[in-house]
Image 1 (cartoon, rainbow, N blue to C red):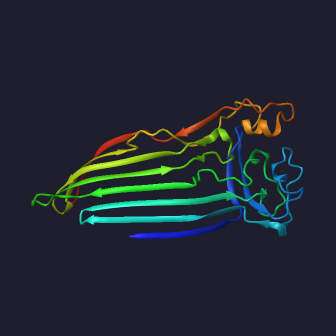
Image 2: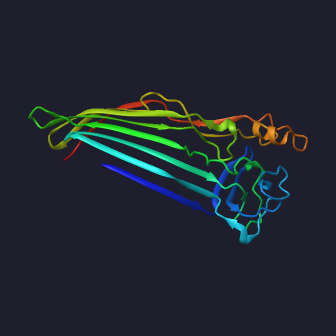
Length: 253
């Protein structure tokens, strides 16, 4: 089997929740076809411009790409699947902070215009193998299953600070077991994140550990703002689960 799908979506009032180290900042991100102050005013450190007339407000996020799914069954008890997704998921080049255009994009979000969304890798490749062979004529059957997922780079922070970038990585899960006649019982040994891949799920600005919003990108763009250096920000992250494993017993009555 082979399935191919193309998609294109636009989002208005894309609600973005960002922790800046002091509080949660929520904005309904929209695009603007004629930004007050000119294109690029949404990246102004002081945010004196960057608003938009209501009639010029547009969708702020566009996601487009293609998905391919394939499956092969060389035998009655054997299956191989594979998948590939290319997703170009970006903010528009000029942005405002609400659906009327009256609120400029928050200065903490100056990296958003024209960039990929957080947690949105451009490429994802998946695959799996499942084998359930009969064991003799007793009705017993085995189970061997492996799946994997490969992801390209993406940023884990909603403000897209470069310190929150996650390099591409691959994960693998596996399961092996034996099942009784008519699958009335089963014993399975399993492992999640079999390769013990280490990666960040979400990175964030550590609370109350800097005088400013804190990325090296902010230093490069704005230098010192209001006499306070942005260079001292500390970042934290929620890590993905390490390798876990166990045994599962199943039964039907």
